[in-house]
Image (cartoon, rainbow, N blue to C red; front, side, top):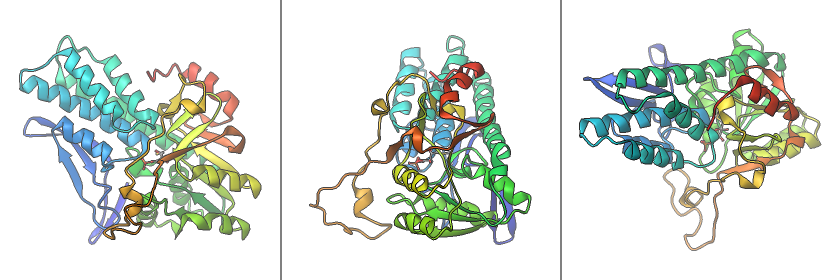
Length: 356
Ligand code: MRU
């Protein structure tokens, strides 16, 4: 992704596997520091990799999936260096990684795909790194294709609403929901993005930061304002990302997605979900089985450095995701084109995509 700096701009990626002094490390853009400072978080410790996922130094479904794979490589490296390697220990680390954030399918699907492809009986770090980089590259490429397949949805002077951050920061690069916007912008189509702030973690700031860096017109709005802008006729299209998509087309995504979908349907505005196949869940039958992450309520009692917005003794709860039923979704944007809920499972089977 492009980032404007004082002396021009640089290109960077959200998640990378790097080698420093012969030791493999995880390199992440530290998303807790954005939009104010571009800082990187680097570690060769698998425990720190897990913490980075939990504390949302990296967040967004494909980004945490790729981070999970690199974290597992760090785990193997650490056990080998300490002469503590055993397959049960690796499987335990794998489990801890997958449990770091429960809702996004990608964390499980990337880590399981990786472990299914490697041979743990003959340690070969170079081979593991190659397989990891292939998976990471495939994910980046899929996001690029999502954008190319759906840029035609965006036309001159449109107002587009997006929720949370399903941009390059939530993936390796390009993003899912923001990918068509990147491609439409590169073809000089003029449109405006309405960016929901996305309380409590304010991922809207990450989206605004990406759009600012790409010179895409945007307005940052509070979550409650989306309905009013729809009422005013300023929003013609909604595109969001997803964290887990069931066979029936039910979508788990950032809390607040559901109400935007219901509003969009009420106002007759097309509502699209951009979906990499790593997010598709073939194993759960019912949306009530989706593990919804409830995060620490400290996140809603504070804003930035301001503590005690909410008195500590007030009861609070902090679900991080909600579920949008398929009847509110106009279509799923995939690398293979735009498809309908009833086509999801067939396409998935045809791709022979092994998630877990
Ligand atoms: O809690 P987060 O910031 O990890 O939630 C992210 C989202 O809900 C995104 O919309 C989703 O992961 C899609 S990312 C391409």
